[in-house]
Every structure is written in structure tokens, then in C-alpha cells.
Amino acid sequence: MAMLDVKDLHVHYGAIEALKGVSLKVEPGQIVSLIGANGAGKTSLLQAISGIVKKSGGEVVFEDDSIYKVSPRKIVSSGLVQVPEGRHVFPGLSVYENLMMGAYLRKDKQGINEDLKKIYERFPILEKRKNQDASTLSGGEQQMLAMGRALMAKPKLLLLDEPSMGLAPILVKEIFSIIKDINEAGTTILLVEQNARMALQIADYAYVMETGNVALEGPASELASSKAVQEAYLGGA
Amino acid sequence: MSKNLLSRTNIIWTVLVLVLFALMTLLMQMGIINSYYQSVIFNICINIILAVSLNLIVGICGQFSLGHAGFMAIGAYSAGIITKMIPNYWGMLLGILVGFVISTVAALIVSIPTLRLKGDYLAIATLGFSEIIRICIQNMKITNGAAGLTGIPQLTTWPIFFFCMILAIMICTSFVKSAPGRACIAINDDEIAAEAMGINTTRFKVIAFVVGAILASLAGAIMANYFYVLTPGQFTFNRSIDILVMVVFGGMGSMSASVIAAILIGLLNMYLQQFTDLRMIIYGAALVLMMIFRPQGILGTWEFSLEKLLEKWKARASNKGSRRRYYG
Image: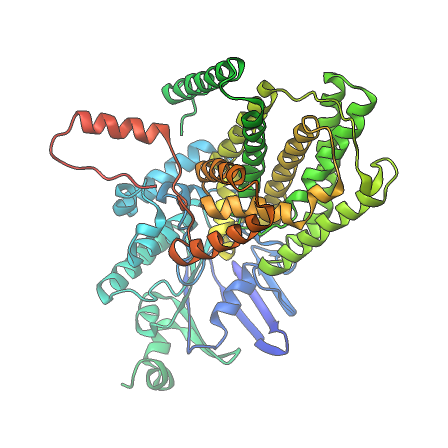
């Protein structure tokens, strides 16, 4: 049984159709990558799944329940959490407060403290900077903070929107190894990426999107070696 | 963030506030602060309440409201009408509470649909709303229409002004530090991310809006019971702008900045009393200059914190060569 099952999903921005009937499945424990060019509809798809963008047709099922018409906060509390594109930390709050914002819907104080400890272990830099305003962090630190904040919500399924955007290559590597770690610790991940090579490397399964449709799908290793993908996204063979 | 009610900073604050109160009372009783200056100070108290409460809506939550005068009018007229019928402190208390109820209802009515709007639209909606309130007051019998209410008993005294002001400041500063306050800051910082974290954005915007409206009606009520006369003309669009100027002038998002700006502008008003028309021009010019040279306001988002000041002193006292930096 798939953890997340998206069927024939449509999204419109006014007259423009951003998603023209996208179907996708995420199995529990997997990393699923979603690659594609700018404007393919990757971000729209994530935002539609997490309820931030209005859907105009289709169905989204998360753990056997339809979340098609559910509000974002109910989706978050059911365990589906998104890290928005471009990091989106709260610059006016401290690092600690940002993390606590992630646990916003949780009531179990002890669990929250334990998770906070775990996140400080995973991202030691965040503990070092916990009293600083988030606006004073570097790009990579902000990405870590955004991920840490999402983890504070105790997600079953984490939606990551372009975590490597605007980061130095060495940091991209670090972020991806962290994503892998998070997945190995038991969180299922749906990853949207421009960096197709890295995204296919760590993923179990992948989808290629083109102008609002899924153009290709398959196990990540297969896609990585497919000719079409190599030419279009990996810069030739 | 001191959870302990009897923490060192809280005690120091209490002492400072009491000393300020005693000092001012003494100066007033000795006649050094004459009745003219007294009314200036009382006006400043009212303006501080208005400024911190509007800052809660505009600075902390990022909702651009131009309707503060409307809520103030509700509070002022509720208290004015009721104290005319029951001219004692119970009447005043009842008037204040009725003002709270009406302004809460009004704030809910206006905010639930409009806080889904953003930026300019919200400003226009709240502006329209406050004009509706003013025009209603102008045309109702109980408020005596455009002629206004006269002969309202003068019940507000210096301790009441001072107490209400401190109360408003305390409510606003502790709101900022509370969980709903942080949610509001998060919404202001990044609404999409806040929504993605599961924050019910509309709900917290409404909460901030209602708290702000209640405090504005408190300011109106104590004002009505000091200045005898109420006319709808006191609650025009200009009044909302006056308050907004204080918030922007001081720095959006900083409560201490609003307090300082309200005091500075109160004093400025005193000196500009002779030329009332010029006052708005100077206001306008000051705002334009401010936007050019210091768009973040006098203090920006910097907040005065006794706790941090004490830590700083301590660090300086035990200076071991390594300089520490404090943020925020």
C-alpha cells in the first residue's frame, strides 16, 4: 500500500494549467525524486499535496485517507510536512524559535525536547547558533534549519523542495547525505530537485516531469542510465 | 524569556515602574507638572496604548490596518454613554467592558473576511470599516450625532492612565513572547512557510487583530472619561494615521520603539500646538525623510530588554578579553 498516492492531479493558476493530471506514488521508507526543468510543475505538485495551493481535480491519498480537501495544518499534523523552496526560514525568530515553530502542532513536551536534541546532534551548527536570528545564518545553515524545523513536526513523509538550490557543491553533497540519513532513520522522502544527478543517486524511484505531466518514471538507477534522461537532464552520456 | 514570575528582571521592572509612577505623582502634586503638562502626559499615555496595540497588528503580525481610530471610537463612546448614565467608577468599568465586547465583535466581523486579504486590500478594508463606524456614530441618537457627547464625567485620573498604559504594554510584550505571538511573527516573516508548518494563519491574524482592537477601545474609554467631550470628528482617518505614524516612526515590530515614538511625537505635538495645520505637513515630511534615511524606523526591530542589558553588564564586569556579541 502506497503511503502517498496522487491520482490525476490538476492545478490551475487562473487560466494557466500548471498540473495536467499528474499521478505518482510514494511507498513507505523510500526516497522518491521528482526531477524536471523549470516550470515543469514540480513545486506546484508539492504545494498542492501539502494543501498550500488549491487543487482543481484528481485525488490525493495519504495513508489511506484522502487529503484532497484537507487544510494545510491538518495535513501537517497527520505527518506530511513540506520544506518549502528557497528555504523560507523565519528571519525574525531565533534558530531555536524557528525549530519550535516546527513542533507547533505537537503537544508532547518530552518528545519535542528529545527531537530537538536529535536535531542538534544531526545539525551541530544549529545548536551553536540557537540564539541567533535566523536571518544571520548562511544559505547552507538556513537550509539545515528549514530541514530541522520540518523534522520537528515529526513527519512520516517529508516533502523537500529543491534543498540544493543556491548552495555550494560541497554543501550540496552534505545536504544530500543528510537527506539519506533522515531517510535511513525512518522518514519517507519525496524530493524535488533540479540537480538530477544527485537526486537520482540517492532515490529509490523517480519521476521526470515535463510541462505539467509526468514524462517518465521508473527505479532511479534505471532512469539514471536511460538515454533520454541522460540527454535531457544529465548533460549527455 | 523568564518563565519565573519573580525573576530578577521582573522585579527590577516592577521597581522601575513604581519609581516612575511615584516620581510623576510627586511632581504633579507639587505642581511642578502643571495641568497643561498633565494633559500632555495623559495624551501620551493614550497614544502609547494605541501605538503598542497597533504595532501588535502591523508590526508583529504584518497586517496593515488603518482602522484603529474606529475601535478607539467604539471604546470612547461606550464609556462615554454609560458613564453619563452611571457617573461613577462602576459605570466606567461597565463602559470599558461594553467597549471591549463591541470592539471584539466588530473586530471579528471585519477581520474574519478581510484578513484573508493582503497588504493594500486590507488597509482599504480596515479604513472603510473605521469610516463606517464613525458615520454610524454621527447618525445615531444615542451618540448625539455630529454634535457629540458632552458632560462626560471626568473619572480617569493619573493612576488609571498609568495603570492602563502599563497594562497595555505588558499585554503586548508578553503576547510577542507567547506561542501565538511567535506564530504571528512567523506569519509576518513568511506566510507560506508558516502555513507549511501547520500554523492556522487566519486564526492568529484574527487573534492579534482582536487584541489590538480591545486595547484601542480601552484607550478610547479612558480618553472619553478625561476630556469631557466626544465628537465623531475626533476619530477620522487622520487619527488612524497619527497612530500609524508612531508605529512606523518608532520601528515596526518593536514595542519599546512604539513607546518612545509615542512620547517623542506627543512632545512634538505639544510644541506644534500653535500651528495645527502645519503639524500634518511636518508629520508628512518627517515620514518621507524617515523612509529615505531610516526605513526601519528609529529603533527598527530592536527591542529593549533588561535581561540582555544585565547580561551585558555582567559580561563586561567579568571581561576576559573575549568579546561576546549579542543579537536581537
